[in-house]
Amino acid sequence: MTKKINIKEKLGKLEEIASWFEKQKEVDVEEGLRRVKEGNALIKELRERLREVENEFEELKRDLD
Image (cartoon, rainbow, N blue to C red; front, top):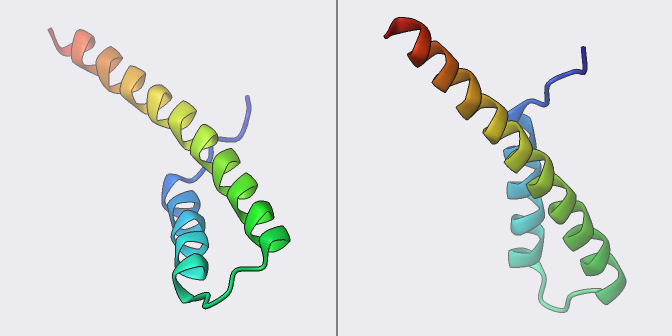
């Protein structure tokens, strides 16, 4: 079984990335690109995990019906 990602942890990392951009007076383009790529990967992971969670809730709901 694959390890499930921690949604709270990944959202925290996204918040750190957003905060970094907000604090910059002059953004280092290379560092900004690296962080955008990291954020993109995090968003993809989160979307997949949220789909999994939604499916689990739907299964539980069906079991109750």
